[in-house]
Image (cartoon, rainbow, N blue to C red; front, side):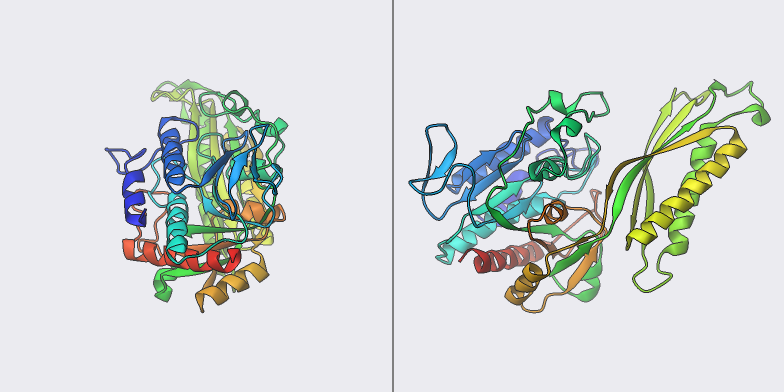
Length: 417
């Protein structure tokens, strides 16, 4: 099936009529519909679906027929053990979204991978090793708060005993949603190539439709809990207030200033600081809040820069809390160090694609998790003409998407033949 048809079929799933954005949170109705779409599309191509206990799924194109063994596991007839596919190449991405997200972040890599398989078959390619299209769950962290959750669990970088206690905003635990346990989904996988919409305008400025990733900057999510004293909005004198909202507001401004002051002040020096989520108690219009919890997304071009940024924000929060008569507690909910993608694999992809630019990214991806877990990984970026991401304004042209499909097919052909 063509990229255009696959894209048309997926496009309406989880789309808000009010904003045009997407709400595909893991294991809720829209994301489950997207997962069902993938299963149907992969089955229509004759691919063999395999799912782990966390909800991650891979659709396999095997070089030899596979049949269920006596235990119901998938194994190559008479040859390959059910525990894995030796020498396998993996591509794919994710189907979940941020709240009110764009159409392309994640799904582009999945749809492009399905389309690339058809391109390879049209070329008469016969794989010598298995090729899988992976869909990792909860890449965005929009429901259970931890980005790349599915790939962390599939690789074993995150223990199930820890992950099962993660809760969504309604208090539902991950362990109440999926069975959990262990995953053998990545057994035998020798490399991972993820195609993704660029989240920025680097390729636009370079006039290039596709590029390769060199690295992912260090980044993390940090929760600030500002505590004060609830009181009446009308009868409490300004001088008598212990208002955590003021402490939060000053901290948010300090974070922006700390990021701006360090951003671009030296070669390759980059800082990003964003407070994008807020919870207020009791959350009344005519009440001074007792607590404000705010989540900081912090990123930088080096771990030294990230530590410096966090230090400056934390110091500003503490100083303002002392002034306001409030308290502040900082909790690191997730932190990821710099990821350098596999140099040999990236070089091989660059040779297959003949001179495409190689650029770093400030966005986290499942490919970074697999690289950290010891599975050589690389990334293909496709030009995003608006440069906007995590927003309904995210946009790619179909011609650029088709260039991406061809590039992915070229790369995969070089790896599976």
